Length: 419
Ligand SMILES: Nc1ncnc2c1ncn2[C@@H]1O[C@H](COP(=O)(O)OP(=O)(O)OP(=O)(O)O)[C@@H](O)[C@H]1O
Ligand SMILES: [Mg+2]
Image (cartoon, rainbow, N blue to C red; front, side, top):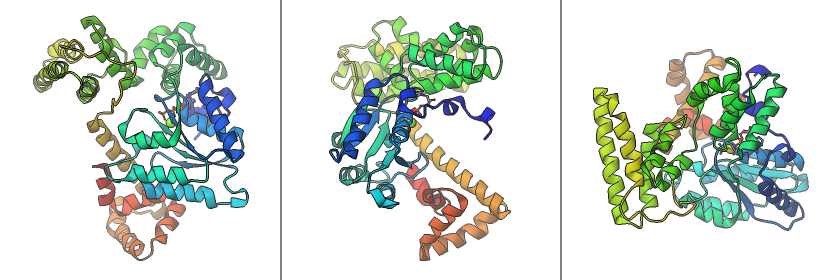
């Protein structure tokens, strides 16, 4: 990939911890932790949890860089089962073990992506691996209160990574503008920083999008960033649930990236979590959500978009202003990602991996997809049943993970993972 095409958030990803802005507490905890490991005084793993785009993955990479550690990573497209995790830890332990675990760091990125349903008992097995491992393991997750991660949290040192402050984001945006020699209005940068809600990746993406299509002015930012932006839904849902007036509840609908369909799913999933202690609140919230859903049906099928304001008010104010509303804590525990969205994302991951491997096979074999599916794959499947080493050989030849090859030769089992 040429430098020009590289996304800026990658191009300007800090290599060293000293270039990571803010997150001082997390950095210190991580450094102390790795030093204790190197001194043989620590056995526990580390779990970094916090919202997207705040530096979790970056800090683990930077830690490895600063301490000269070799990083063994489980990447996002890996099918994350206990067996696969065992394999990565095993590799880290056994390869070039001249210095034992010294000089190695294992990263399990986005552990909340572990599919508990498809891999029953998965988490407890992972907890065992993590407890017994003789290498330092760092993990990342978005949602610190995900109930399925609880046993893992208990076995780890947990580091809270906070949303970044506007001024931290502004600092990085200014730095990028001067490195790229782009003239940027400071007002425009401030607006990008404000609407990123602490997510550095999305702020940098917004800046790149605006800068590559014209001058970076406040007007163009408000026009363009709204399309590119994805808010942290946990924050938006939290804002709605904690609102005490109609106007504060409906305020979220004016956020540049507002996405009413997602918010409806998120509220439907999480109102029950927030109001579990009050029957009155629950019944009012779900009454209003179901009315909103009826409106949605009419609006979409009859294309009557003028119903939208009523729908928005019902799904926000209707959920915020309820009878016997319980007092909500600063962190509403147990808030979760809507299952429906999670399911769709998972099958997308499978589809994307499959398309990528097929593309490689097509270019290397000079055959069409249909020929590959008809003639080659069944053959590989039979060979793999007789000797599973062939999967590894093929994965190496194609430069993909074994998981990806398995996905191609056993589509049914991969699909099953997504269900
Ligand atoms: N604290 C920071 N200082 C400087 N740059 C940052 C910081 N946090 C994030 N970034 C920028 O944002 C990009 C994304 O960060 P990173 O991948 O570490 O996020 P993350 O916390 O792992 O998010 P996710 O939960 O979505 O995986 C980085 O490539 C980097 O350019
Ligand atoms: Mg990450």
